[in-house]
Image (cartoon, rainbow, N blue to C red; front, side, top):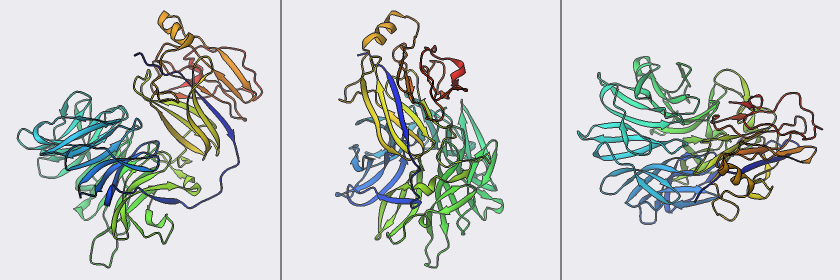
Length: 513
């Protein structure tokens, strides 16, 4: 069956800003029958994966979505979900006579193989479903691997015997740590077949745990003399010390796409005689204990933050009433304050560095299995994001309701409102099959909403965006060669402009890659 992405529209009525609230509220992710839950990965729409204990005492991988926790149902006695992408794919590992790396996709589990030994574990997952992790070789040496859809590639080491990959981005840049010939280990970034040593903060050791699509890397590194091991950020060819929470040890496990927020855990001063770690968020040049940013008296002790998305949601695990629980932190209005990016620019914390109103497509274009649409709001408002065909019929409503200011990413699995996959329909399909050139048909709804319905080659995606009341703009179709594409309004437009022309698809003056 042929599949197609059709058309999307964004209708926004901007309202007054929302009132200030607590920095974060805490959501308990629940359980699978017994106490014990840890969250390790979160995607753009707030879906979470990790591991939770069943009533039988086994540890099972889960997905948390729509307020409920679901067992992935992976065979074996123990399984853990380590990363989840916007399409809902999950990478991790499970135990069934040996540890094996897996990719879970809508209920289907794929074993990723190994490097010749009887052990493999997946830790990182890209937006296109590529996985990284570590596996035993034939000589039982643990080596970092990259899996691009067919088989594992051994990434090697930095001269020593072992390595492990922990994070991957859309460009297939892989990060982790690898041993040197002298017995130390350093953080690395692997790209195009080459492993690069990222160095340290002056000491002998470092590890990398995550990389965003901008190539910014986070992890931990030792300072001179190895007396302190701090969370670290590698960006623009240099490494930055992110500090600690008073006891000299910290590690960064996740970074958002703009590099404005980083999360992890750090040792805190304690008189209990035990080593105590707290989850942290680093933003605007400072590290803060997340336990100081949640309502007091909840009984929570947040011990580790493992993931963050661009809406500011943070996941991890901690203790509550003496039991280990997974948590999801939901940011309030005060969490959207202006902060300093890594380049020193002052940007809204979750703004995505966008203009007054933007809609863009993320991921593969054309898309055959799923897509993401990202929209940004200058202030809170009622939003409807819907997919339409060329006749104006609504195919799928993706978002409707009051949305806070900031950037949101919405996944679409190419199905309509009834759950059926989208087929080529109407004039658009006919034009595509006949090979005719793309054309655009304009349709104006009212003064502040002007939609374009370009007829394009199936299965390209076309976006339609409404006008901000202060700055209207029209969007042509996304060019096949622009991937991903940032869509920006043309300059010099007028709020009262009436749509009379039909711009050509891929107009360079309206596309900002």
